[in-house]
Amino acid sequence: MPAIEVPALIAGGSLVGMSTALLLGHHGVRAMAVENHRGTAIHPRAAQISQRTMEVFRSVGVEQIVARKSADQFVQDGAIVAVETLAGGVTASYIANLNEGVADISPTKRVFISQSMLEPLLKARALELGADLRFGTEFVSFEQDAEGVTAVIRDRNSSRTTEVRARYLIAADGARSPIREKLGIRMAGRGAFSRSITIYFRANVEPLLRGRNLTVIYVLQPALRGFFRFEKPFDSGFLVVNETGDRAHPVTDVSSGLTDERCVEMVRLALGAPEIAVSIQGVMHWEAASATAERFRSGRIFFAGDSAHVMPPNGGFGGNTGVQDAHNLAWKLALVLRGQAGPELLSTYEQERRPAAAFTAEQAYTRYVTRIAPYLSPGGMQPLAPDLNIELGYCYHSPAVISEDPAEARGHENPRESRGRPGTRAPHVYLSRVGERISTLDLYGRNFVLLTGPEGDVWGECARDAVIREGIHLDVHHVGSAEELADPGGAFCEAHGIAPSGCLLVRPDGFVGWRARTSEDASAARLRGALAALRCL
Image 1 (cartoon, helix red, strand yellow):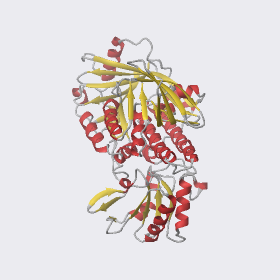
Image 2 (spheres, helix red, strand yellow; image 1 turned 90 degrees about the horizontal axis):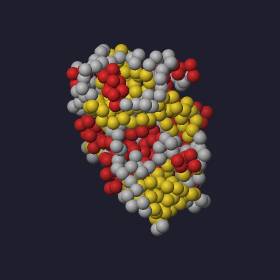
Image 3 (cartoon, one colour; image 1 turned 30 degrees about the horizontal axis):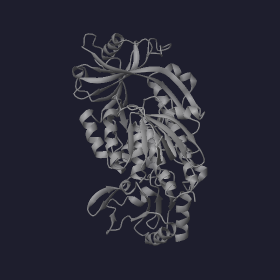
Image 4 (cartoon, one colour; image 1 turned 45 degrees about the horizontal axis):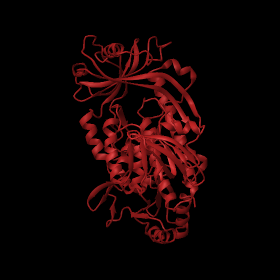
């Protein structure tokens, strides 16, 4: 078996595996991703893409094309509501407009796009960045040692096996992750609570919508509970069914013994149009569950996406959480592979992502219980947190963050309140660069970034020394400087919690790693120490 050597091998080439390959390529790491399916997503699972994920896509140059494709496929900015049937009226409203009240917090918008439409866009960009994507390839086995992981992969067409030697393995191999199972890593949480289905169908539903701009339509009636999503031009969509029958004692196994006739019956019941012509295009069987892996790392193996956490689709958090796993891990792997960070930096992946994922999984469960299955509420659940806190307000606590007050550590918060505190996503402020409006977020993506206020020139001098001595890339920007980055609204310093002479050190993932509120005690040694600490050196 001929051996191939790669710096990083990814088991799984769906949304999260593809995103991992793309982001590693963005950081100069040519990863190999192997995917058992012969191509990108088969089922057109509609994905709600959060502002944070769109920010990640923006950093790698695909935000605009994703936004355009989503607008072609779905009506945007719709409401999330509940009905008894689509033909009837709205019985509950959860969100009036998907992007209402969030335009100030990010340069991006929440969008809907199906996974079958999104994955080819990510694939094209990953290939441009040098990823080696192998579809129709089975991940057969693996063994790890102190220096790396040796895996065997098999081409499904030729049955030819190949040995791959990687420094690191990223398991993005799904909710039933064979890699996680082999390593004996357990899932902790609520477990599975429904054997659900997604029915893909064709039917003319436009007359039933009656011009209403509805993004996600929960169907809550005695016969069944689930939700609809429709594509333009409103002659196709899907119906998720989580349970049927009595709400107090429901049938939660909707999957077993399913027939096309039963699928047509359920679609018509949910539409409230018993005579409408319905054609079933396909059915996906899946488990509704909420759980988080007890570990996100085992030696040189890391878990991302569904292999690390599973959650019901309520809230649209699952795929976004996986993309953010990849975003957190990619820059750390790249620095360690280049010898520019200590190996302990990789331990901060679990320390940062596991609490964020566990919180998100619980919040998805809370939404499932309150919207679909109130009979589960005696088991207890987290109080409902705002979507914005979940999408943009998760906080990191690890050695890769220099905390200002560990006693006030928070798991999440309203991102409008973070104001540049270390461990939080750096705030969005619009600036002007040579007459072009940009976001502060456009300054992040590959390197560490030092941002100073308009009176922070001393920090720029310190940075020159740090770059020479530390031997890393450090981008330096003086915000409020007329010759570089103008701050037309004068909002930068207040938004980032610094005086005009202060500075922030932002990590490649756009999270604040360290902050000096003023230039008092400014020195090259202080900045070098911060840079070294954030890289676990």
